[in-house]
Length: 278
Image 1 (tube, rainbow, N blue to C red):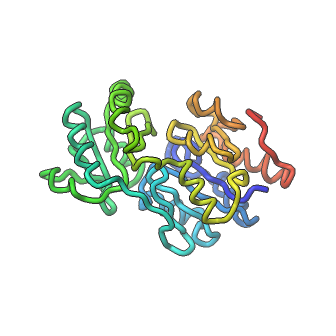
Image 2 (tube, one colour; image 1 turned 180 degrees about the horizontal axis):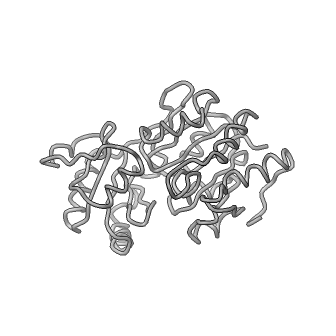
Image 3 (cartoon, rainbow, N blue to C red; image 1 turned 90 degrees about the vertical axis):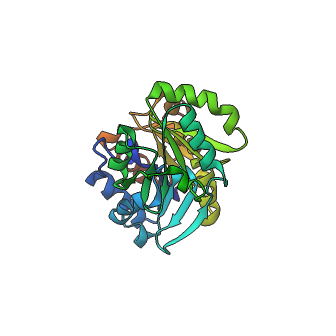
């Protein structure tokens, strides 16, 4: 039995124009009407997911927002946080020093704003994705003692792949590190990822992870796709995601989420089971 749908946003539920199609929306509303919970799972801050939650009526049907790559879970119906794991104290300052050493951009999130070391084209992309204000403090040192949930280092994909390798000894046992988009190298507290959030939400709902279907397309989705949940890769996924998933559906631009749910969950009902790369 399917009890929960866990969906990445960018390049999964949303099309390349960052829009929720009417087809995907109708299917997810129908799923919720049948008693299936919906959780949106993203690297975005919670604030940047609220409009989608409203569009999908998650408050009405008891859905959830998993934000910051799994560092926070928000109960839309009861309007409360059920899980939050910020970065360790001091990590923001250490990552700032790394950004200066390697000459890359850095950003974090304070209240409802993106706080960047300087204006740059990559943070502009994040601003377009999230709809959040971009702020560049006159003196970045002034915010280094703030409690934050996630930090991103930003540069061209080649540089970030190199930096990911260089920073592996620094992050091991201290911070979770993942690439979401090719130019976003993201840092959360140790152990935080979408897989942890899946476990936390299942525990909260008192359901089995095998009663979850998880949809994703990129590297930061791998932790939730490698769990006991039924895993679905989008047709536009990176190869590493396709290789671990039980199923591959159509692309994000061709309503792949809706097609899978309609063809597998609604059509097969209780007889639906996972079959590798079905």
